[in-house]
Image (tube, rainbow, N blue to C red; front, side):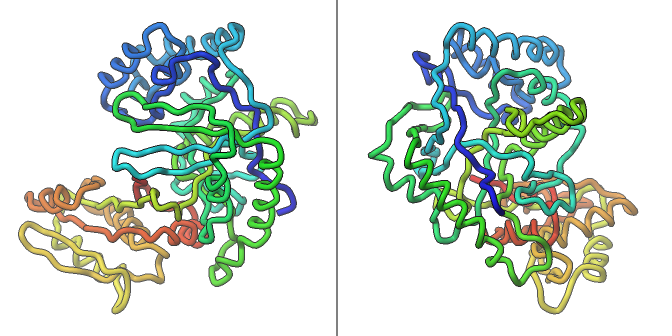
Length: 400
């Protein structure tokens, strides 16, 4: 890789805003809880706030969607015209987010070159999606982004940095950096602090990143498939929207030089999956309205091996284990989900995705149900799974 694809950006921050009112959680959270977003709007009141610059997914398909979409770009333009922002040119921002459990998640905010990213299944680009992109979810986001003068996505970009050479050295010198903000987030969202990374510190990071990118493929030399540099950890559809808007711009301007156009880039937060605060939790499967014994026998016949990924199943008060064939996927969830997708095309049953172990076991006790308790995914399996299998199955894991 000849050129770095994660770069410093012109980062805008409000000059004099009440930051507690300014910052809100990502728009794809609390999708079934409109009351949450109503409280956020009440907390922000008339103060400058990102609640006025995003479209919560809880509003998709409601009468509020069109109204708020039209307001968003006008409000962005108003904030720019009124001088709400101060620009930190050609910089990164080092961020520490204190989570509810007290752990601190580290990240570095900058811009990603969208020419290095492809969300399509089978992509061999340097940056890939971790899950299959649902293209039907892109158009509402396009309507917000297409003419937006600024962007504020919630995209978490992951690196598989075992040796912690990228973000952690920046963290080690944070006391030498200018602190930009330090405040409690609303609605119990924890605490967040940001420091400005500029000048020589930017140059040093770019040098380290270039060396990291040059050698990253050595980690995956035993795998079939093209190695990758980064993976999308959250905000898959926001990044896909940025890419689609960029491709749309290129298609509408054939022959134009868009190499320095702002639409070529998307703001992201780079995080290391080997950060101690990054916890991968499994998402289990329960199938209801099915013949559980028949499903289990089919699974044993079609997707199991003498040695493999051990997965526990539950039917009523009965339980046992199966060993899923590792030749079919790098991940247990990959083997199971592929089988279930095929099985449920031909047989009765409805699948649901469950985060809690006890909830899964209880749901499997109902009539005509079977539950599978999946093992946690090792952090290193994420990149290996995407490289080997392509985009991972939906609901493979959650990041806490």
